[in-house]
Amino acid sequence: MEIFHISAECYPMAKVGGLADVVGALPKYQKSAGHDVRVVVPCYDTKFRSENDFECVHWGTVKLGNFNFPFSVLKETTDKLGYELYLIEINELFNRPNVYGYEDDIERFLSFQIATLDWIIARNGIPNIINCHDHHTAVIPFLFQFAYKYETLKEVKTVLTIHNGLYQGWFGFDKLYYLPEFDLRHIGFLEWNNSINSLAVGIKCANAVTTVSPSYLNEINYSANGLEELFKSVRNKSIGILNGIDFEVWDPSKDEGIASNYSIENFQVGKQKNKEKLCEQFELDSSKPLFSFIGRLFEEKGGDLLPQASALALSENFEDINILILGSGNAEIEKQLQQLRDDYKGNYNVFIGYNEDLAHLIYAGSDFILMPSRVEPCGLNQMYALRYGTVPIVRRTGGLRDTVIDFGDDGNGICHDQASVGDICYSINRAVGLFADKESFNKIIKKGMTTDHSWEKACEEYIKIYNLIIQQNEI
Ligand code: GLC
Image (cartoon, rainbow, N blue to C red):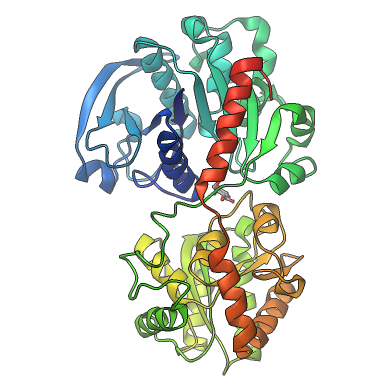
């Protein structure tokens, strides 16, 4: 089967969050299962773009209302990714260092979607499945069905995978003229709450909607930033498929980015070596339990709770613990986290920014990973942590609920119910107790390291959905 994944992010070409990890891994596993898989992302000005070779396979002009942007389609030539990677190069819109955050994001991602379809229709052959990811590509299922110029692609089946339903890509009807001409009888598919809502368009028009965990699918029926009723109404074509993690990239026994490789046989020695390196780098005390946070510093991830929770935990347990934070995001949170450095020198540190190698070392060298998320559609960090023998401390929500079970219930981690400073500190206290009981602690670590979150199972589930919509138009 020929499958296209269309996305704003794909690791290693462009990464902001977990979306990139998923779009960089799932296609590889689909390819090894025997399918013809292609990934299409915009051509940003990233390190991967400048350090790799590409050939131009198509060029044209994308029309966005009155604007005409020249574009090229670049194919990555080394084939080292395990699937074919194509970049849509529209210099005026994407030759910039960041993936998102520009005033013309709506124009950028609409142009990306239209250029991608212009190219697909110009190729020989019609793909079987187009898997769109998040709102940046969610208008595609509508265009396939109703835009006159894509008429011959009408039969292509589309899947919309939702990694984060909070962001929806709204724009006003004043920009309706950006879209290629379509059958106006279907204009209702574009509308949600008096504007054009890209995510809602995809949810309405795709043949199937997937979320990245089963629990998240349940949660968005009552909390989805205004789309609750819509999600309820498409329940019969929706399914939650838990993400996997890429075992080739995330393997402590082979990871070249960490200080010492280890497996379940020798994790105590291996993890301690990584911890020493990490503690040396961040002036922490390697004899004490190390709690880390990796991620975007936003409310959604509970980032706003970290400054106060860290201060409180460090005051209560000042002699007993270290806290290390790696992330960036909200400027106020960043500032508060940096201020704590002076007060808790030797027990606390923060690295503002993102650094993939450092993230690997933190998973390897930490004892606990904090994930106090308010919303977590799947969450990959807890799965990376489990694989690296680091015990996750999570708020029960979305994919965290599906992957972490409290050690009190014979599970692999520590769970709390509220995204609150009190709940985080309570869990840290339980963790300190657990850390002191080495026998139980090691048992939980081993359980985590043997949990199988490989992509194979998820990959099969996606293929099953693709087959169902190809055969019977529904799931
Ligand atoms: C988004 C979600 C995260 C999920 C990831 C990959 O970043 O916030 O929970 O794991 O996408 O699907």
